[in-house]
Amino acid sequence: MSMEMQMVGVTQKGFMAGYLEALAMVERLHRLLLDVIKDEFERVGVLEINAVQALLLFNIGDNEVTAGELKSRGYYQGSNVSYNLKKLVEMGYMHHQRCEIDRRSVRVRLTQRGREIRDVVATLFARHAEGLENKGVIGTAGIEDITSSLKRVERYWTDQIRYIY
Image 1 (tube, helix red, strand yellow):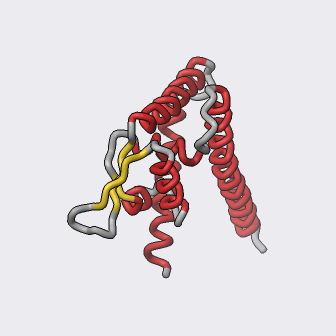
Image 2: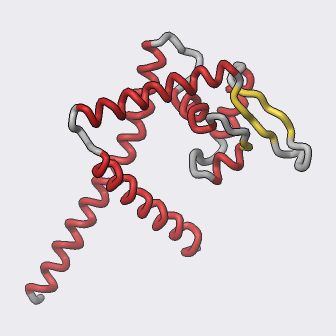
């Protein structure tokens, strides 16, 4: 095997190791984000909703949406969206109403209680953003690089789902 062929193999192995490390990091960061949100809600004494539900309220914000729209926007996968929306309606964090056009579809929006939870998450994220920047953990250019890279991976994965099968 030529030296050039060996170098290609090493480079590919190095890239694969980096890719697997990045995948593990994304997974760990997501779990850690949920833990951070859970910790914040424990700190402020909100114990009846979980971190996934709080993040759902944050992502809905001032919009009126269907579960399908949340899935299509890429926020949530599978049946947990419907389950969590149902629980949030039952607990008074969301209003729901059947669509006039498609009676099978339900539109949801936040109640005042839901907006209060959204605001807790928004304040937490603002505090984190300020801390990351002020402590020199990451700056504007770094966050733009990360976001740009993650969007490219997202597009690649989406293309794999749409075009391979």
